[in-house]
Length: 259
Image (cartoon, rainbow, N blue to C red; front, side):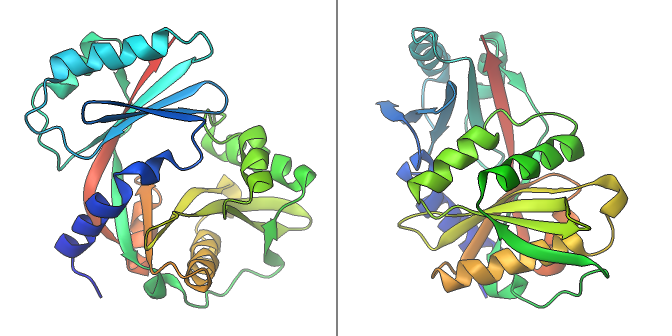
């Protein structure tokens, strides 16, 4: 079992390079920044380290590159709480970026989550691959979250599945209806797989379903040779992942600019 410091080092070393650009339509560099564009007109900015960087210059230069492309409707600048980046918050806000909810960066050994979890009577788990099921899964997530996902709508997920990049969609069903779901996204060239998009309809929460979906994704990650899991978790899912064995190593706050 890796301790918190070792997990954070693995996160910085393996997941904050070109690994985040997996699936991007285009990637360019601007000094220490990675400027990525994803399908659907989504821009995404990340970096390995901004210590000593001139953020007052980098932020507007990066944004101008996205502004020049009329197809880009939204840009997310991903920040981490353990970074040294003096002035970044103020500069992002001054350039029209709006901070969203802070989330916990959760890391841990996949084996810690790969356990058997009993399901409520009548609830079953399965992988989702067919288009009607993918659309039903996304509709359930939109209902559970109360808002559509800009990055991971049905069209984007169907493209990923068609590309064969390792994405897995898992759903819990009851009486033929999807009531909970989540993604598994192996990160090529790393020890990691991401567990994302965990959503459960309100009336089905607190019954162990999300925990069971997490466990089945962990088992699938191990089968694919991925020994570590990562997730950016809301305050709803963080306690569940902590009970399962994942550790909060830092925080992440997305800053979003919209045209």
